[in-house]
Image 1 (tube, helix red, strand yellow):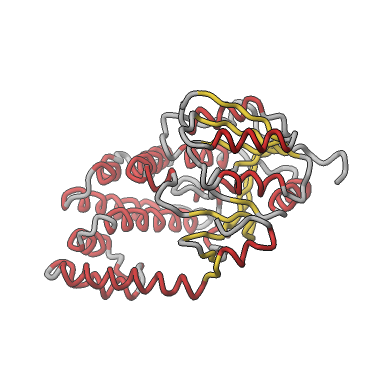
Image 2 (image 1 turned 30 degrees about the horizontal axis):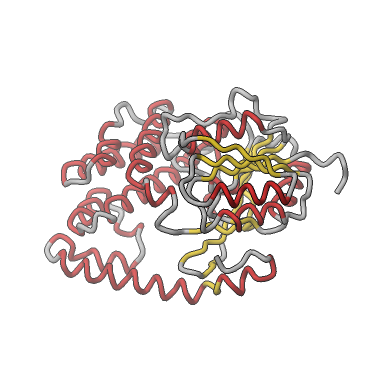
Length: 370
């Protein structure tokens, strides 16, 4: 690798990740891009995470290790940013692992497009010991700054920031947006700096009950709706977003009806936007509906999901199988529950057919089956 290749700092916050962290940090140290530093912060782990990180530090001088009391993910990320020396700064989670070409592909993108502020990529998913390949989403052909107002445009552990473009004051995580700090940062950056989605999977994203996303789903959803509400108010697409935020606190007949009314009012305002921006806002609003649909559906109260779909007139926006399963939700919720359970089983069968055993898929990269 050329000496002029930019240094990449990889931020690796770690908290009680003993089963996974060795694979995560090992996948970075085995990158075909060699000019990197790993900044690992042990955030007061109570398991053997620190011991594993210390062993990695002794084995490879590119690892910098900080250990201290628990302060939370946002504090760890900002502390990593403060000591990172690289022109490019990459995120990495302690329960995922990167393909060997991840950083070289992302460095090549910034070399070809030096104006970029940050980028993300597709991911492959690891669930129950099987890996499914990621697929490009056509929505990313639209305006990323607009989409970033509605959802977290990139999977956080795939992101690389360009510190030659992004001002130091802009690149920080805000602790007031707990468990949606990435959504908040991406919306701020996308308004000021060009961004790009890479149409290839550079990382294996592990789905498991102990992940931050799984453990803090309720708080994440509340903060997500708060951020969307702030964005819509700034864009003057909503005057009052309390009806949107209320459903994040409690899912009930009242809050479902209020959220459905909010979606209707939002769609009316978006319909009046210019042709140049309207499709991106329409896609964002549809994503917001899907977010609400998932939130309500997770309550496993089919009558509420039926109400949301009816009031928003979005029956045709969901999968046919779900449509049939939820149709009797208002008068026979037990039938809907049974049908949805069967649908989840069918999804798992489909996942098995569309995925491969992790042990065989990852064997060429010496990552193990994990």
